[in-house]
Length: 168
Image 1 (tube, rainbow, N blue to C red):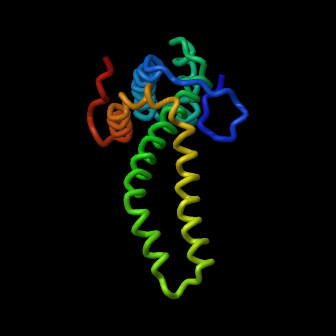
Image 2: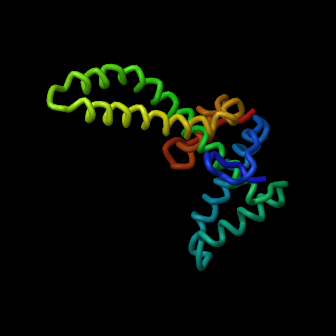
């Protein structure tokens, strides 16, 4: 089963569970530790990237994962976080939209037709953004509780902090 947030996707869409998000996070911590080991011993491999991904895939299978499902869950999680962040941005920007529309309508250098075109375009941008956000909402209940821990996970994987998040 493929997880996707693409509005026009031909694939079946299913919602993530909190257990899947938690399991993915725990596994992602372990696969990143594995990646660090491979990087630390890069001189042992012709291609450390190929060696790591082979080892990662073997680790995933050994620990009950389907490799593609792991990747799909990861994509769905990150798409969902992007959707949540975008919704917050949309909500904030909508507060300012009316004053922007008013400014366009008060512009004496634009024709009525130009004003309508600009205002319609402004609303269309919000509509398109909202459609993209809405495509992620089925996963919000599973991802939202872990949003901050996933940010910590990303910071840890990037080397910005010393410890991964604690996953209960």
